[in-house]
Amino acid sequence: MGCKWVFTTKYKFHTNLWHRLFGDFCTCGKAKSVRILLSLATTLDWPLQQLDIKNAFLNGDLKKKFICILRGQGYSQAQTNHAMFIKLLGDGKITILIVYVDDIILTEDDENEMNRLKTCLTAEFEIKDLGSLRYFLGIEVARSKKGIVVSQRKYILDLLKETRMSGYKPVDTPIDPNKNLGDSKQKAPLIYLSHTRLDIAFAVSMVSQFMHSPSKEHLEAAYRILRYLKSSPRKGLLFKKGGQQTIEGYRCKLGWAHDK
Image (tube, rainbow, N blue to C red; front, side, top):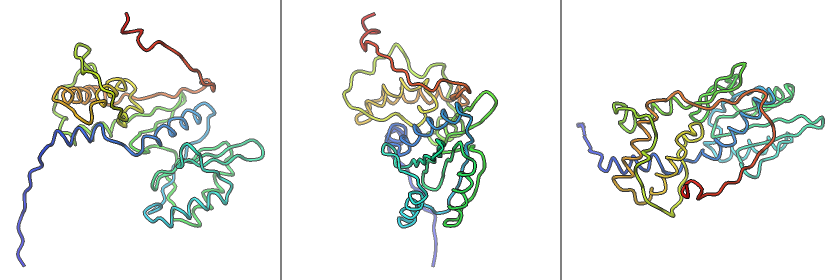
């Protein structure tokens, strides 16, 4: 039996790039929950542990078994995010875990409950205790006396490499204020990087409105966001210790800036 090399040419690279940058990303909802969990752990000085379950959710039966075990241990599944499980103890203490595929973030104010849960899961699954949280869903986590810093440096560098933008010249701003991209009533989710890079949130929200019918101008705007990310891949969020535990809401006139 003979063999031969087969070379293929990938067409419509720019179209694929557009959908890669602005298409749906299934972990966006989980990332919001993770961000809230990090803020809570920082404020209350809770530990953050990471577990890995081998082949946990590759099999539907294993997924059902995992959920049944947690419920049997007194954990309830959050309504807004089914990947989050919460257990309220009688003495007012709480344990929270977030699951994504085979990765678990675990935090609590009761060390005994955390160790008991680890023992319970180890008896049913092949568990690897990764220790303190370092990396989850493309988010790098670093803890210090000041608080918790999250960034997506590796995610950005991988994205630049994947989109062939590593050699492009960086820019200082994510969007050109002198360009008008037009109006669109279409809605699209923000790309995943906006969870730790709030400085690109406005630019991404503007460009992603045209994801269903992008033009050359919109593609150039997407390139500019990538070039801006290249100039500052290490930027991220800092969750400071001692922050407030209240939620504040603000109201503003949407057309105020336009009127000015």
